[in-house]
Amino acid sequence: MLAVLPTLVSLLLMCVVRIYPAKVNGDDKKHLNGFSAVALTVAAYLLILIILENVFTLPVWAHVITFIVLLLLLAWPLRIAVNAQRDESEKLPHIPSEERSQLIDHSTVQESEIFSPPEDSIKHHEVSADDDISVVGKNTNLLQAVRTMNFWLLCIAILCGMGTGLATINNISQIGESLNYTTVEINTLVSLWSIWNFLGRFGAGYISDIFLHTRGWGRPLFMVLTLATMTAGHVIIASGFSGNLYVGSILVGICYGSQWSLMPVITSDIYGVLHMGTIFNTIAIASPVGSSIFSVFVIGDIYDEEASGEGNSCYGTKCFMLSFFILAAVSLCGSLVSLILFFRTRRFYMQILLRRLRHLTRQ
Image (tube, rainbow, N blue to C red):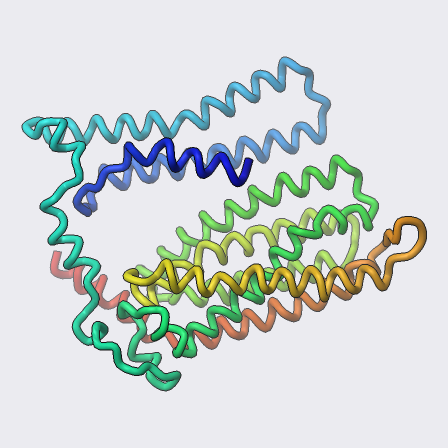
């Protein structure tokens, strides 16, 4: 399902995609906020539903009703899209619908101007570790990016943060089993993890935008905070007290999602948007590499050493305590690395704030 359905959705709906000139107005913001409201509503609804299903035994008719309500919530974005299209049509009454539905040719010049890199960044000069401060904020290609210190700091931060977070996801069921959680509780933890992951992705992007444009706080600072919080989450999981997985999964899940929101934007901030996809996906290789290292050589090996009895199973806090203390130390190292990146890019993010203030002053 994960392999086929997203691909089918993209193939079936790609025919309705249209290119429009970039514009920013109140109506666009209103419709985008509507999509955000839908996402938050669905997450809250699922959270309440999961908790109710674990507290009470719902009859069949209750499952049918809750399923119908969920389908209505999922259809809500379609209504927002229809309203947005209708508002756009009312603003352009004199333009035939055929022309409005076509790719807009006259926007080509504008887009080329927007995405063309500055003259000083077009020059393919040698970029060394000492020169990487000068390329911050400019459109940089992959070969130039890998020669900078910021690129490797991002790689280490992803390896420490996303690698340890993914290792936690891979082993959360077995951790629950070792701590004598019931099957229902383990399934609940896995279900709730997706909600915490979503809230982290949504919240980190929103909050970092606010603090960047109001106080000039660089996004790497939020990487520092999320990795430090993830460290606390790993320590809580390692402690093994009653209900520790619920608290620890909340912290690790939200912080893991936050990093998936922050990392692409930090990459585009530092290296520009022209080659952002290539650069970020190259950096993102650190995530599965880190997950493999921590899942196999840390959690897996330590679990095998502690396992005993029939089926080589392990029960008690000893199974994962040392593993998650190691993951906590790795996350803390990632937080320190992100702090270095924050100080290296602080001047650049302050320039973003100053440009925004000048723009508002002119208006």
